[in-house]
Image (cartoon, rainbow, N blue to C red; front, top):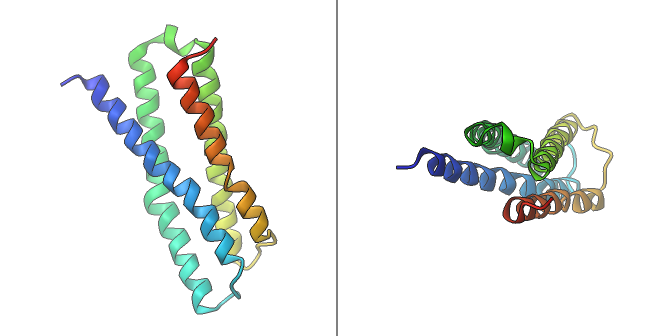
Length: 144
């Protein structure tokens, strides 16, 4: 078995899991905005958000990064110096920053400090989609 293809497959699987969480967590926040602090529904959302972030999103992001760096290392320095790769890495860093921002939002819900509206969360729900589309086109077409 080709180790590169195995790692690449695992990398794609981990990215799919990570993206699922990045797309789902803001949607949960939309509905969480509609609850009262301390209510049974609020507590259920707090639990869902915690589990999604800690047991799916965080591990998937970490595995995505480890495998991505490993794959890039297997390709060598020349591949890493290509502009499309550098742009992709920059966008993945932005995606990781968005992931961190969602973690901060989750803690604000937990501590009754959320001041964002459900419309805000609907709007930011599009950010990972836009980043994902750009990243996919960079990987497939390798422009520049």
